[in-house]
Length: 93
Image (cartoon, rainbow, N blue to C red):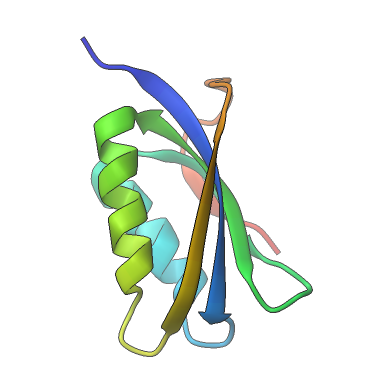
């Protein structure tokens, strides 16, 4: 039995202009997770991810590492109620 859950996240550091949203999206898709990611006006990247609790934990670990061009300084995650409304993971603009 899987435990479906959702987590809102905010990543700070050098995460804009370095392909970070694409990294987040591809990582989520590889894990079978759904929802969205976008740049935030304060220079961070924010998003929401839904799926299996264990897979979200793995996803959050990858966000802390980042891609090779980013410099992740902070990762915040906050549990949300699962909606199941998304069918894929998308990059928002």
